[in-house]
Structure formats: C-alpha cells, structure tokens
Length: 153
Length: 182
Image (cartoon, rainbow over all chains, first blue to last red; front, top):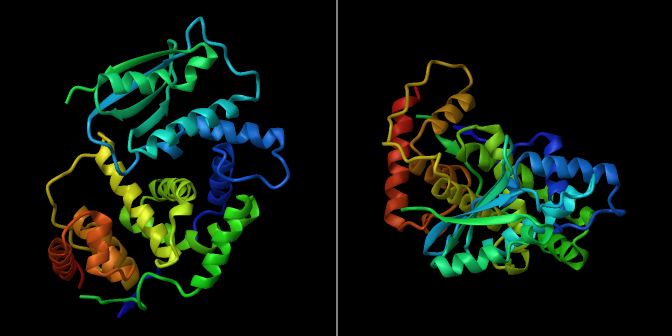
C-alpha cells in the first residue's frame, strides 16, 4: 500500500506572487501601504503574464464569444511611470465584474509592433450586449480605442 | 497494482480554525489574515493542481493563483456546512475545467492508453507517473476519489457529470493503472 501525499509545499515565491496579485487586484489590503518598488514589481509581474489571474472563467454564460481589442494609438494616454499597476487593477476589476456573471473568458497583454496592446475575450448574449460591455471597458477613459469582433462559431 | 491509501474524506480536521480564519479575513481583508489562509490550504491545493495537470508545475502554480483570486472574490458565499478545504478544492477543479473549455489551444484528444512504466524502485513516483499518464477524465475522477477522498456524488457535482460516469471513469482509471503498474 502506498500513500500519496495530499499536500505538497509549493515554491515559497508563489506566496509572494499570489499576495502581490491579490493586492494589485484590490482583493487584499496590504500590511502598511504599498511601497512603490513593490507596486512596480507587482505591475511588471501582472503585465508580464497578461492579467492571467483573471483569465478563463469556468462557468460561461450562453451566447457568443467576442474579442475586445485594445489599441494604444495616438489618442492613448500612457500611464505615468510606475503607475501601470493602477490601470491593471482597474481592468482586472472590470474583468472580474464580467466574470461574476459568466461573461469573461480571458485576457492577454500583447507585445510586438503596432498599437494593439491587449485583448479581452468575453461572452455576450448578442451583438448589442457585447457592444454595451465593450462600451463600459475602462480602457476608454485613458483615450484608448476599443474594437469589438464577434468570434465565428 | 499498487493501492493508494487515503485517510477519510477531503476535509481536513480544523474546521473551527478555518471559520475563524475566514471571519478574520473578511473583517478587514488584511494581508496577514490572507497569508494565514494561504499557508493553511495551499499545500493541499498545490498537490491537487499538480495531479490534475499531470505534474506541470507552472500550470499548477497558475491554477493555485487563480483559485485564490476566485476564492477571495466569492469567499462570502462560502458556507460553513462544507469544509473550507473541500470548497477551495472545488474552486480549483472548476478553474481547471473552465480553462480546458475556454482555451482553444487545449483540445480534447482521443483517450490514449498510458505508456507502460519502466521499472522503478520508488512506488510513489511510479504511481504519480501512472496517474499523470491517465486520460484526463479518468485522471480527474481518480485523483478526486482515490487520492482526495471525494465521494462519487461530490465528484459528479464538481465535474458536472452523473454519478454513474464518475464510477465508470474510476473503474477505467483503476484498470489502466493495473496495466501500467507492476
């Protein structure tokens, strides 16, 4: 008879990553404010993985999948240095509010040439619903351009 | 084949402690209170995630991260009648299954018979490898039932399948393990 362990200690660094992501997402209150360096590190981590903590909700609403494309073109006002984390947190909260009603699938930060900076994949009951959701994307408030595409089944 | 011992159900023993930890966290959502929850339950979540991902550490860590995000988002819906660990494991299983459904890079493949394990001296490593080689559906049920201690009814609810499917997947997993283990 062999007993398999029901507990396995993960890499200790995972705890710090989880905590920093949760703090950045506004789900956990940090101990004594958040040192700027720590915030910057958290932002880099979160951006590097493309808001992965909010990817792919398990229970999805019926309807179609849509891609919400975020363009950082000439009208886009980049975040001041070291304050990207605030934008990530705002987008994450928006994604989370969609996820709570099964309308969020995944998000990704995109790199490479061109103004396309990121995308969300959402679910919506129809085109009008998707347009309403895309219109509420906080990316607009920074002058970003939001484009919506329906994913063909 | 090698049997897999388990001790009771999926619930760990300190339900009262869990309730206190949850209450403490919900009072102020403080980092210290979260770290206490994290340390109490992450080793179990990570062990489960490793088995469900066939030993992929990066994917398992990612699953654990997302599980905590989802758990904290919905912690107020946690009810004391289920143990916190069971609830968290359920969140993780659902995060994992949601990823399989939503990620177009992950495609269902026809069930593949596990490759026979080469002789090893470490029985536990042999079993872990054999479990990792199981077809996904059978592996999920096997891990939840024989390792984590869930009942077929609980597994059916978690995975959105009927109890009969859970039982047949478990039998299938056990048969495949009998073939692949000396």
